[in-house]
Length: 318
Ligand SMILES: NC(=O)c1ccc[n+]([C@@H]2O[C@H](COP(=O)([O-])OP(=O)(O)OC[C@H]3O[C@@H](n4cnc5c(N)ncnc54)[C@H](O)[C@@H]3O)[C@@H](O)[C@H]2O)c1
Image (cartoon, rainbow, N blue to C red; front, side, top):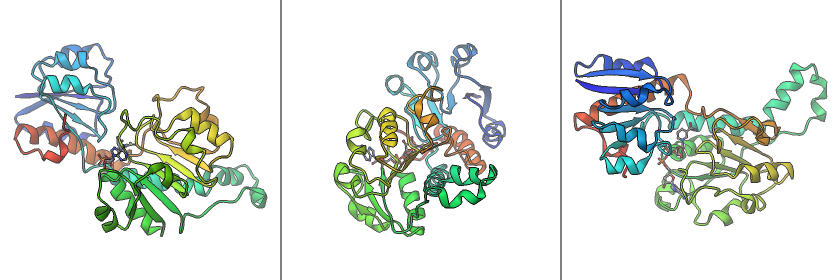
């Protein structure tokens, strides 16, 4: 029997895959800070993990641990060095969430462009007749969008942007211009030069030493005043202080953030009170459909790994 520890519960469709398999048993632990975690991880063969941080000292306790299966695609919450030292592989739900995240980006982009909060409030508060006094909304038709990061989500987003007849530019030094053109986009080589001409910038890159604070005041100062910037990748890629300044100085039109430098963001984070920001609680992938897909892929990846059938593209190179 292989023992699997599900850290932070997942949709029951994912649990059912393990429950229906004769060779697996599992336990669910709701919180990574639960003191029971240290005991339970000792004899388990695999872990399913959502967004909680899994530090090296906890991973080291898992003497039989062979796989950490992420419910999602980011893995910056896992101590990679310890995994490498202990030959533990990290698997991701590579195919599950690109649609949900790209739809969420379109939702944020349209909500900001159409000043969703302000227009919605005007009717709900009995101020329908003030509509001519409200600041105007803006169209996305014919506008330039820069997709930074052309992986699973970037490639899914471009189709939606082209559906709205936007001009799509892509910044991803690791993807060829041929590939980008085959999707209908245009590759840009230099981020600093490219952003100056953009009406929208959407980030779809991992958080790393190179990408931390990639969008900072120096960059924000060069953007068009109507520019909308969206981060549904990882907090910290945009410097939050700099973004707040840029919004307050009307350097850009607005921003959409699904992710934050600290999650949950502190209540005194000024971005929480900024009307020009549209926020969601790291929930771009929280569609009913996506949660089921992710849960099933998370547990199936564990079984496939032990069956030696796990696709290489789902394993993170450490
Ligand atoms: N908000 C959410 O709930 C949510 C859900 C899923 C994924 N994400 C995040 O979205 C991001 C993208 O996910 P994905 O599945 O498309 O990943 P992916 O690995 O398929 O694609 C990432 C792309 O970024 C490119 N890249 C890497 N470093 C870069 C750099 N310095 N500059 C420009 N491009 C760079 C890579 O070449 C790759 O094409 C990740 O940060 C992931 O953690 C967030």
